[in-house]
Image: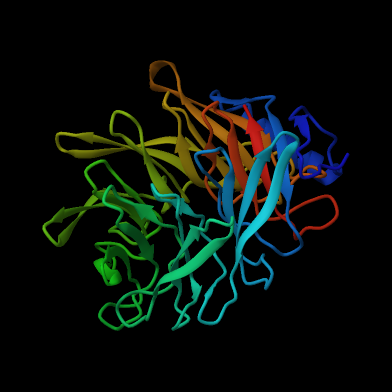
Length: 416
């Protein structure tokens, strides 16, 4: 059966193995998982909401508007194959796909790897690591027009001479409407090769002004920062490479006037690995994230205490049926964590899983495999975080995979 853009549901019940080699792989993975008392499987339902054209590469996750429509990016989609921003409109018969804007490259933006973020007025913001006036990346805005079209504005083109370059992660917005993001390189010689920074874009009567609010300059304070998270007070949290153990660190930036001060909350070890993706808070103020450590990736917790922050390893992936290489987390009101892995699961290395991690009895956490990607007519290799709706359903993208070709991507919905 083929899945059209209106969505076709199926249960994640056991499915035929592709071949004897994969069957042997899965048998070994099952043996591993039998040794994990807190790993369970769920017969959840997956729907494919859209299948992309060849080569579009939807790398990032999706974002809801107030009406329940979905928005996202494809790195090589759009009319010019330089990337595009798309919308999936909810209708009575399914989901209708449309392109809001096609990037042109050159002085325009190009190859959006991050998703989009709404402000309170309904404008969309995002980043591209390529394109712009200096070909060092951009921050762009899409504003809805009265005729249903969207107007694109390049808010900032990175120069690469100390203001940063290669903004791969997306935008976060504080209560005042100020934009924040991270750059993986500084673009000057003030630090060694291991650097990066956090920037701010503030709106004024004369336009948007970019300020590099923090510079990472080596091992002790980290390098190559990933996506960032804001707390209610406007402090910035994130993960970076480096650290005294050279396994990464988690940092916090607090503002004192116009100066931002960095505090290292945790030095990661091989057991947790380098932090990957944005951190998320629960209602008690604990931080959660995923790391590249262990055998195939980890989930960790940071809890505030009188003496600092306590680092706790919650789960280590095996690279078997539970998947490998987690990419980020989202959390619901009950404190359950959800995420995806980009590899392995039921269908081998070209697969991936969607999972949940729930607090259980006696401080133990229960990991549940909600879906294994890579079956026929299914996508595979999801790379970004999931998005929750008000009913607890999960939405995301796979970068590749359909029955007919390995170069498509999908937008999916999982009903746990």
